[in-house]
Length: 176
Image: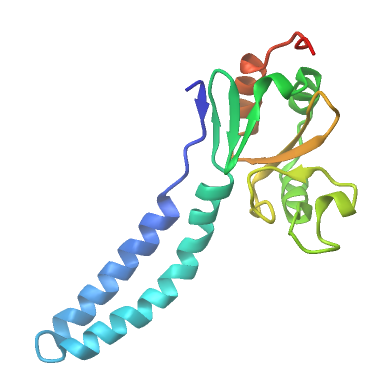
């Protein structure tokens, strides 16, 4: 494995710890007399925990990046490195968007499988990974394939990702 973006687990750990502390605190006052009430409240608060964990789980499934010797894997998609245009990587590496530009780009990166919301309907690059949009705040990098198809990839660390991709991508064109 040449490169792998690590998923931050701080938010998930905080949410789970607060949930466990909350149900533990409720259990001190209610157990063993009111086991049914405690169990019901634990399930109710679990319904509040799940939406808090939905975004980190989605980021892990759809925007996890791994680069090995021959493949760029983003979420559920695998792209052979030989099909990526090295000049587009250099162009993306030369860009240095501000924080406001990164947030605006992540808000506007939508590729939902609904007529009118596909990226190709608006002439925007296709979002890689299988998600319907880039998570707010994640940096989006636009690269191209050798056939000219623009691809948008949501990343947590733009410079490390582009450096690893540039090192792993073959610079010579493959023979047809």
